[in-house]
Length: 444
Image 1 (tube, rainbow, N blue to C red):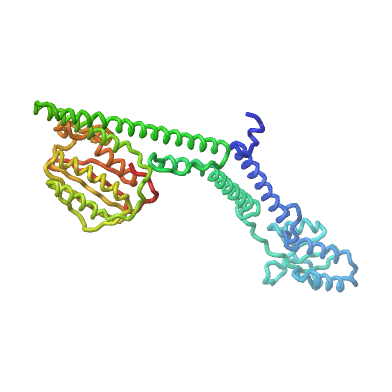
Image 2 (image 1 turned 90 degrees about the vertical axis):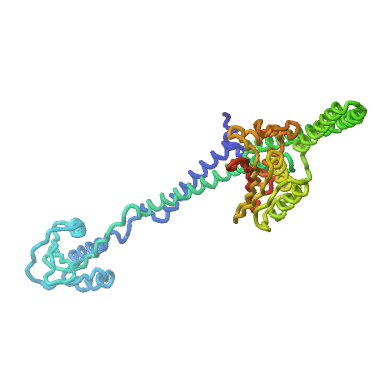
C-alpha cells in the first residue's frame, strides 16, 4: 500500500491514521499541561513542614554572640511566627531523645551531631521540641504535624492519566461513530428498499470507500427498478396482445354447435383471461402509491363482510365497531378480500375477527375448509403456489396469488401474515399490523 493512499484523509485508512495521530498528540498535550500546572521539578516549599526554617534559626543563633541573640531571636520569631522559637532558661541539659519518627530523624540529620534534641517537660503540645546549641544554650521550637500522604490514585499523575484515557476513549468512540454511521444508513436503506415507490438515493458522503459503495448501491437500485419496469411493460404489452385473440376465439366459440364443446371452450377462455388478469395484478408496479392515512379497520372489515354476504356467502364479523390504525385503505381492503375469497372458496362459511391492543391490530380470517398441512404452510405464501389437493378441489379456480398478495401487503405495512390450524377443522389466516407506522413503506 502506498504511503499517499494511507495518508489520504478521504479514505478510511487515512482517517484512522489521523485519529491515531490526534489521539497521541492530545495525550501528550494533556500530560504536558499537567506537568506545567503541578511542576514536579520544583521543590515544595511546604514539604518539610518548617524543618528548614527551624534548622536555619538554630544555626544562626549558635553562630551569633551572646549579646546579639535576644535581638536575633526576636527577629526570627517575627519572621517565622508558626515555629514558636523562644529561648529556654539556662540549666542542666535534659536527656537527649532518640529521633523516633521521620520528623525528628530529618531534623537531627540536618542539624548535625553538635546539636541535641530533647523533650520539653510538662509540655502539652507534643510538637514542641527543645534544641541544645553547641555552646549549651537551649531554645524551643514547634514542629509542624506530619501530613498524611495522599493515596496514589488521588495524585496528580493518576488523575492526569485517567483524564487522558477518558478523553482519548471519547474521541475514539466519536470517530468510530462517524465512520460507521454511513454503514448504518446503508442497512436501513436496504431494509426499506421497495420497487413500488421512489425511495431517496443513499447519501454519498463519508470516506472514499463509503462513497463508492453508496454510488454502487444507487446504481444497482436504478438497474433493478429499470428491470422491473421493463418486465411490467412487457407483460402489459403481452396482456394487450393476448386479449384480442382471446376475444376472437370467444366469438368463434359461439358458432360451435355442440353445446358441451362450446361450454368447455368458453370455460377455458374464461380461465385464460382470469389467469392473465391475476398475474398482471400481482406483478403490477403501481407508482401512484396511496398515502398512509388513519383508517377505521373495523369499518373496512364490516364492508368486506357485507360485500360477500350480498353475494350469498356465509361471512360473519366479530369485533369492535370502530378501531383506528394507520394504513393504506385500498391495500387493506384488497388483502382481506383475498383472504375471504379463499375462505369461502374452500369452506362453507368464514368469520372475520378483529383484535385491538395499544400497539397492534390483529385480523383473523377463519374458515371451516380442509385446512393446509404444516408442510405446505411455508410454501403457500409464495407466488403461484397453491395448497395441497384437499384445498385445490377445483383446478379452474385460483392461481396461488391471493395469500402472496395479502402477505406482501402485510409486510409493506410493517406487519406479518401467519397461518394457523382451526379446531376441529379449517384454517385461520392472521394478519398483524402496527397501529402506528414508524416509517412509510411501499405496498405490494
